[in-house]
Length: 105
Image 1 (spheres, rainbow, N blue to C red):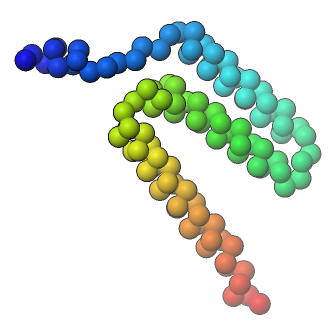
Image 2 (image 1 turned 90 degrees about the vertical axis):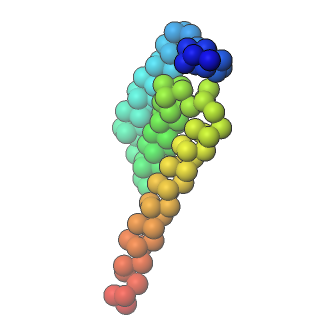
C-alpha cells in the first residue's frame, strides 16, 4: 500500500470558509466586548469578566483554527492534559501567593 493510499483512507474534515468568517467575526466582537467592558466600573469583577471573555476567545481559536474540534480523541486528550497542567501550575502559584501573608501575623 502506498503512502498516498494510507493518507487518503484517514477521515478528514474540511471546514468551509463561511465557518472561518463566522469565527473571526465572533472573535472581533468579543474583542470589542472586552474593550467595552474595560470602561465599566465593576470593581473586583473587571478581571473576572475580562478573563471569561479571553477564555471564550481562546476556546474558539483552539477548537476551530487549530482544528481540535474535528481531531481524534487522542488530540483532544492532549489538549486537555495541557490545560490541566496549566491550571495546576496556576493553582500552585496562587496558593503560594495567598499563603505568604500567613507568616506575618
